Length: 596
Image 1 (cartoon, rainbow, N blue to C red):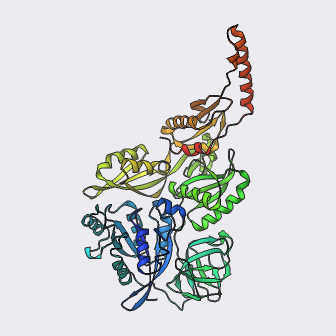
Image 2 (cartoon, one colour):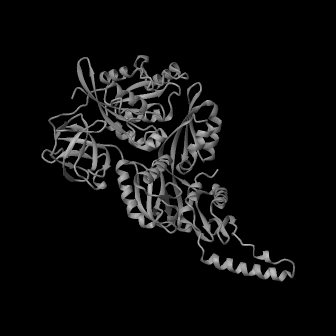
Image 3 (cartoon, rainbow, N blue to C red):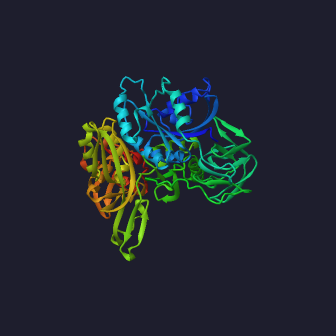
């Protein structure tokens, strides 16, 4: 056990985690040059196309130093704030972390939040200054930022470059000398923590775990403590680039188990595995349950595909434990699911993965957050995940909405513009700290609902891409909220209704109506698009009917002939409007998110 090292890589988006992981795999000979490709660990097409990591990936490397053989288990993690749950799970399976900072960009918000996650689990931190080969690198300045942040010395920081391979040997030596070997008793009852799982259509569910105590032999009977199910360990082993079967895994190992589990519900990330013959009495204290930040409805385009969608969502949830969903129905869209996501990027990725991996074309409703409504009678509490669940306003005492604390790190040139944006979004500035002469950390308290739509996009554009953003929930506060309904020809479209702040309702209603007017195709009859609060209409737009020129054949003669033809047409249009219904295209649902 003393020669095993478990470590993960943490950093902000685009600071070069995956590229550096590629170099580590090449240097240790884990991947041959023939198998090598950029982002070697990222196995989804989506990850390659976007150049981001979505899933954590574990892989085992063998390394020889001073005549001793070491086993290094590396977990590469995502950098985007929407996938921080993946990071927290990887950290729980490690003893050390490589903190990678881009030498040309310095420390950013996600670097700090991932670092705090690692420090909470008492991980050994190895700071690395990456991208040293860039002409814009500022090693002295960024080193000072790192020293100020973790309180290390200049000698602890390893200069490196994922592209050229500079410093890779030093990183491997530092992992061996500075990361502690796993603690654990090989003779104790078997105890392992599940940190990830994937679905394989031939072999069922493959669970990835980290062994804390004891040992497990192939073919032994195992038990999952949370679900209390028992299985045979048909195949166990380590995670190389492909699965590497072994006869036995023991304390300190990171490995996988295939036991013919077919049901997605039977494997929970954070569960404890033990053996039936020599069971452990206590479950591992894993990681907290995921807190979804954004809620949206996902519906199949064809209502017959509901069961297939459920199956696809369950398999996707195995691979991405931060997705939560529950069945719901909508008058406009039929049966579907109410899904909780960690953010807008997460929502977009899930939608794309459903389309690519499972061939499901889905409609996504307007995202929102969950609210709490307190009723006048008995002060009863209602949880509202969907604006259409809102009871009659006369019965409501008050509504509370979730607030978050947002930390924004930016260059000092953009402070004014960012403050304006936050105040526009009903935010309140709570703190402002200068990290260096031109980097500022701003802290705001702001309603979650305002962050959901386009906050991140706007923040990026006003700061020219420099500002980095991180947030965590701080609880619920009372707000003046009202329900905004969108009506098409007098019928409410529940998929477009939203709970909005009283001061913004009029403006928002007007903008949604104008947007829908552009997107809804013209029919044979007039379509009235209205925004309403209760019974009061606050805005209206009309999509004019497509009309045939019925008076073309009347030239000259009496006006009454023309009028007679127009009256006849008018009656036909009226009749058509009673039987016609309006199809709302998917683009209209999505465009409401990008209103400006």
